[in-house]
Length: 60
Image (spheres, rainbow, N blue to C red):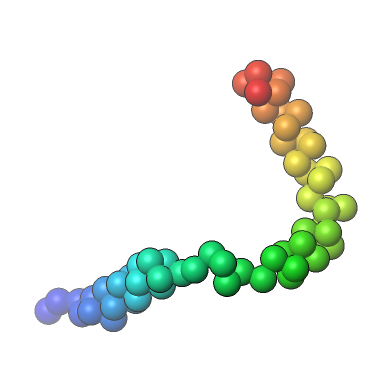
C-alpha cells in the first residue's frame, strides 16, 4: 500500500513553472508603494528594534 504523491509533484512543478515564467515588470509598483506607506508606522519601530538588536549583539 503506497501513497500517491502525483498531485503534490504536479503542484511543485506548477509552482516552479510559475516562478520561471514570472515577469517582474508586471508588478504594480503603485500598489506596493501604497502598501508600504500604510504599514510604515507599524513596521518602522519594529525594524528599528531589529537594527538595534543586531548592532548590539553582532556589531552590524
